[in-house]
Image 1 (tube, rainbow, N blue to C red):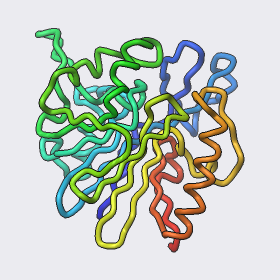
Image 2: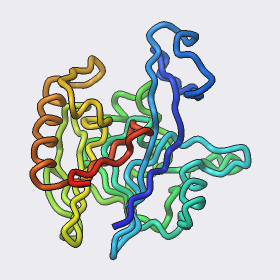
Image 3: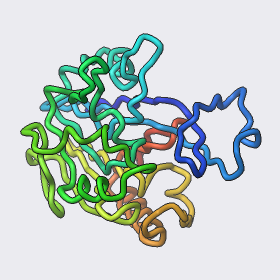
Image 4: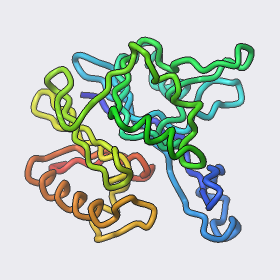
Length: 249
Protein backbone atom coordinates (compact mmCIF):
# COMPACT_ATOMS: atom_id res chain seq x y z
CA UNK A 1 0.00 0.00 0.00
CA UNK A 2 1.12 3.54 -0.68
CA UNK A 3 0.51 6.18 2.00
CA UNK A 4 0.50 9.88 1.08
CA UNK A 5 0.23 12.54 3.81
CA UNK A 6 -1.83 15.49 2.58
CA UNK A 7 -0.59 18.20 4.92
CA UNK A 8 -2.64 21.40 4.99
CA UNK A 9 -0.20 23.11 7.35
CA UNK A 10 -0.20 24.38 10.92
CA UNK A 11 -2.83 26.58 12.54
CA UNK A 12 -3.68 28.09 15.89
CA UNK A 13 -7.11 27.80 17.42
CA UNK A 14 -8.54 29.58 20.47
CA UNK A 15 -11.95 29.73 22.11
CA UNK A 16 -13.51 31.06 18.91
CA UNK A 17 -12.65 27.75 17.18
CA UNK A 18 -11.25 29.68 14.21
CA UNK A 19 -8.25 28.11 12.48
CA UNK A 20 -5.59 30.75 11.78
CA UNK A 21 -2.58 29.80 9.63
CA UNK A 22 0.67 29.55 11.58
CA UNK A 23 4.18 29.59 10.12
CA UNK A 24 6.25 27.21 12.27
CA UNK A 25 9.43 29.14 11.38
CA UNK A 26 8.33 32.79 11.48
CA UNK A 27 5.34 32.99 13.85
CA UNK A 28 5.36 33.11 17.66
CA UNK A 29 2.60 31.28 19.52
CA UNK A 30 2.88 33.81 22.36
CA UNK A 31 1.69 36.52 19.98
CA UNK A 32 -1.63 34.73 19.48
CA UNK A 33 -4.62 35.15 21.80
CA UNK A 34 -4.37 33.63 25.29
CA UNK A 35 -5.08 29.94 25.32
CA UNK A 36 -4.32 29.39 21.63
CA UNK A 37 -3.40 25.83 20.71
CA UNK A 38 -1.14 24.85 17.85
CA UNK A 39 -2.88 22.36 15.56
CA UNK A 40 -1.49 20.63 12.47
CA UNK A 41 -3.93 19.33 9.86
CA UNK A 42 -3.12 16.28 7.77
CA UNK A 43 -5.55 14.03 5.90
CA UNK A 44 -4.14 10.98 4.14
CA UNK A 45 -4.49 9.24 0.81
CA UNK A 46 -3.92 5.50 0.71
CA UNK A 47 -3.57 3.60 -2.54
CA UNK A 48 -4.34 -0.11 -2.28
CA UNK A 49 -4.74 -2.77 -4.95
CA UNK A 50 -8.50 -2.09 -4.85
CA UNK A 51 -9.03 1.56 -4.01
CA UNK A 52 -7.82 5.12 -3.76
CA UNK A 53 -8.85 6.08 -0.24
CA UNK A 54 -8.94 9.47 1.49
CA UNK A 55 -9.10 9.41 5.30
CA UNK A 56 -10.76 12.53 6.72
CA UNK A 57 -10.94 15.59 4.51
CA UNK A 58 -9.19 18.53 6.14
CA UNK A 59 -10.44 22.04 6.69
CA UNK A 60 -12.00 22.57 3.28
CA UNK A 61 -9.91 25.68 2.62
CA UNK A 62 -9.12 26.73 -0.95
CA UNK A 63 -5.85 28.09 -2.30
CA UNK A 64 -5.27 31.36 -4.17
CA UNK A 65 -6.54 29.86 -7.42
CA UNK A 66 -9.78 28.69 -5.79
CA UNK A 67 -8.81 25.00 -5.78
CA UNK A 68 -9.79 22.98 -2.74
CA UNK A 69 -6.57 22.41 -0.80
CA UNK A 70 -7.06 18.67 -0.45
CA UNK A 71 -7.62 18.46 -4.22
CA UNK A 72 -4.39 20.40 -4.86
CA UNK A 73 -2.46 18.15 -2.48
CA UNK A 74 -3.73 15.08 -4.32
CA UNK A 75 -2.89 16.57 -7.72
CA UNK A 76 0.60 17.45 -6.50
CA UNK A 77 1.03 13.74 -5.73
CA UNK A 78 -0.24 12.59 -9.11
CA UNK A 79 -3.75 11.63 -7.98
CA UNK A 80 -6.84 12.89 -9.75
CA UNK A 81 -9.46 13.69 -7.07
CA UNK A 82 -12.06 12.20 -9.40
CA UNK A 83 -10.33 8.82 -8.99
CA UNK A 84 -10.84 8.72 -5.21
CA UNK A 85 -13.46 6.03 -4.61
CA UNK A 86 -13.59 5.77 -0.81
CA UNK A 87 -13.64 8.50 1.85
CA UNK A 88 -13.36 7.27 5.44
CA UNK A 89 -14.56 9.72 8.10
CA UNK A 90 -13.55 9.41 11.74
CA UNK A 91 -15.98 12.16 12.81
CA UNK A 92 -17.37 15.47 11.57
CA UNK A 93 -15.50 18.15 13.51
CA UNK A 94 -14.80 20.94 11.04
CA UNK A 95 -11.06 20.29 10.81
CA UNK A 96 -11.79 16.71 9.69
CA UNK A 97 -14.92 17.26 7.60
CA UNK A 98 -14.40 20.61 5.86
CA UNK A 99 -13.40 18.96 2.59
CA UNK A 100 -16.40 16.64 2.35
CA UNK A 101 -18.05 19.10 0.01
CA UNK A 102 -17.26 22.20 -1.98
CA UNK A 103 -19.55 25.16 -2.48
CA UNK A 104 -20.65 26.45 -5.87
CA UNK A 105 -21.01 30.12 -4.95
CA UNK A 106 -23.09 30.93 -8.03
CA UNK A 107 -25.62 28.20 -7.27
CA UNK A 108 -25.16 28.68 -3.51
CA UNK A 109 -25.10 24.92 -3.13
CA UNK A 110 -22.62 22.38 -1.82
CA UNK A 111 -21.54 19.37 -3.89
CA UNK A 112 -19.44 16.33 -2.95
CA UNK A 113 -15.76 17.13 -3.35
CA UNK A 114 -15.13 13.50 -4.32
CA UNK A 115 -18.13 12.78 -6.55
CA UNK A 116 -17.03 9.27 -7.51
CA UNK A 117 -16.41 8.14 -3.95
CA UNK A 118 -18.48 6.38 -1.33
CA UNK A 119 -18.35 8.22 2.00
CA UNK A 120 -18.22 6.07 5.13
CA UNK A 121 -19.42 7.68 8.38
CA UNK A 122 -20.93 6.46 11.63
CA UNK A 123 -24.71 6.54 11.33
CA UNK A 124 -25.22 8.61 14.50
CA UNK A 125 -22.48 11.16 13.86
CA UNK A 126 -24.37 13.48 11.43
CA UNK A 127 -27.39 13.85 13.72
CA UNK A 128 -25.15 14.52 16.70
CA UNK A 129 -23.13 17.07 14.72
CA UNK A 130 -26.28 18.84 13.52
CA UNK A 131 -27.54 18.99 17.08
CA UNK A 132 -24.28 20.46 18.40
CA UNK A 133 -23.63 22.81 15.47
CA UNK A 134 -21.14 25.66 15.54
CA UNK A 135 -18.40 26.34 16.40
CA UNK A 136 -17.10 22.74 16.40
CA UNK A 137 -19.24 21.60 13.47
CA UNK A 138 -19.89 23.44 10.21
CA UNK A 139 -23.11 21.84 9.05
CA UNK A 140 -22.95 23.31 5.55
CA UNK A 141 -19.85 21.20 4.91
CA UNK A 142 -21.54 17.86 5.53
CA UNK A 143 -25.24 18.43 4.82
CA UNK A 144 -24.62 16.70 1.48
CA UNK A 145 -24.37 13.43 3.42
CA UNK A 146 -28.12 13.49 4.12
CA UNK A 147 -30.20 11.16 1.97
CA UNK A 148 -27.41 10.53 -0.53
CA UNK A 149 -26.66 7.25 -2.25
CA UNK A 150 -22.96 8.17 -2.01
CA UNK A 151 -23.01 7.61 1.76
CA UNK A 152 -22.63 4.31 3.56
CA UNK A 153 -23.59 4.58 7.22
CA UNK A 154 -21.58 2.41 9.58
CA UNK A 155 -22.94 1.04 12.83
CA UNK A 156 -20.85 -0.35 15.67
CA UNK A 157 -17.80 -2.31 14.54
CA UNK A 158 -17.34 -4.14 11.27
CA UNK A 159 -15.60 -4.55 7.92
CA UNK A 160 -15.65 -2.75 4.57
CA UNK A 161 -14.89 -4.91 1.53
CA UNK A 162 -13.20 -7.53 3.72
CA UNK A 163 -10.01 -5.53 4.30
CA UNK A 164 -10.95 -2.29 6.08
CA UNK A 165 -12.00 -2.61 9.73
CA UNK A 166 -13.77 0.08 11.70
CA UNK A 167 -14.39 0.47 15.42
CA UNK A 168 -16.47 3.02 17.33
CA UNK A 169 -14.33 4.46 20.10
CA UNK A 170 -16.31 7.43 21.33
CA UNK A 171 -13.76 9.05 23.68
CA UNK A 172 -12.96 12.16 21.60
CA UNK A 173 -16.63 12.67 20.74
CA UNK A 174 -19.52 10.22 21.26
CA UNK A 175 -19.51 8.58 17.80
CA UNK A 176 -15.84 8.88 16.83
CA UNK A 177 -14.53 5.85 14.91
CA UNK A 178 -11.11 4.53 13.88
CA UNK A 179 -9.95 2.40 10.95
CA UNK A 180 -7.49 -0.40 10.12
CA UNK A 181 -6.58 -1.16 6.50
CA UNK A 182 -4.89 -4.51 5.98
CA UNK A 183 -3.41 -5.82 2.74
CA UNK A 184 -0.53 -8.15 1.86
CA UNK A 185 0.56 -8.47 5.47
CA UNK A 186 0.66 -4.71 6.12
CA UNK A 187 -1.69 -3.17 8.68
CA UNK A 188 -2.34 0.58 8.67
CA UNK A 189 -4.07 2.19 11.64
CA UNK A 190 -5.78 5.59 11.66
CA UNK A 191 -6.87 6.69 15.13
CA UNK A 192 -8.33 10.09 14.22
CA UNK A 193 -8.46 12.42 17.21
CA UNK A 194 -8.16 9.66 19.80
CA UNK A 195 -4.62 9.00 18.53
CA UNK A 196 -3.68 12.26 16.80
CA UNK A 197 0.07 12.57 17.46
CA UNK A 198 3.07 10.32 17.96
CA UNK A 199 4.03 12.09 21.19
CA UNK A 200 0.64 11.37 22.73
CA UNK A 201 1.09 7.66 22.06
CA UNK A 202 4.25 7.63 24.17
CA UNK A 203 2.99 9.55 27.21
CA UNK A 204 0.06 9.53 29.59
CA UNK A 205 -1.93 12.55 28.51
CA UNK A 206 -5.53 13.53 29.22
CA UNK A 207 -6.95 16.37 27.13
CA UNK A 208 -9.70 18.60 28.47
CA UNK A 209 -11.19 18.99 25.00
CA UNK A 210 -11.98 15.25 24.69
CA UNK A 211 -15.44 13.88 25.49
CA UNK A 212 -13.76 11.23 27.64
CA UNK A 213 -10.08 12.06 28.01
CA UNK A 214 -9.28 9.13 30.27
CA UNK A 215 -10.68 6.66 27.75
CA UNK A 216 -8.62 8.33 25.02
CA UNK A 217 -5.49 7.82 27.11
CA UNK A 218 -6.32 4.19 27.80
CA UNK A 219 -7.04 3.45 24.14
CA UNK A 220 -3.76 5.03 23.05
CA UNK A 221 -1.86 2.82 25.48
CA UNK A 222 -3.75 -0.26 24.27
CA UNK A 223 -3.18 0.51 20.59
CA UNK A 224 0.49 1.32 21.09
CA UNK A 225 1.16 -2.03 22.72
CA UNK A 226 -0.90 -3.94 20.19
CA UNK A 227 0.70 -2.04 17.33
CA UNK A 228 4.13 -2.89 18.66
CA UNK A 229 3.28 -6.59 18.80
CA UNK A 230 1.56 -6.69 15.39
CA UNK A 231 3.89 -4.22 13.59
CA UNK A 232 1.21 -1.66 12.69
CA UNK A 233 1.78 1.46 10.63
CA UNK A 234 0.29 4.43 12.50
CA UNK A 235 -1.09 7.52 10.74
CA UNK A 236 -1.28 10.75 12.76
CA UNK A 237 -3.72 13.39 11.56
CA UNK A 238 -2.37 16.22 13.74
CA UNK A 239 1.35 15.54 13.41
CA UNK A 240 3.18 17.05 10.44
CA UNK A 241 6.63 16.18 11.81
CA UNK A 242 5.77 12.52 12.31
CA UNK A 243 2.77 11.73 10.08
CA UNK A 244 3.67 8.05 9.73
CA UNK A 245 5.20 5.69 12.28
CA UNK A 246 6.02 2.07 11.51
CA UNK A 247 7.05 -0.45 14.11
CA UNK A 248 9.87 -2.49 12.75
CA UNK A 249 11.48 0.24 10.64
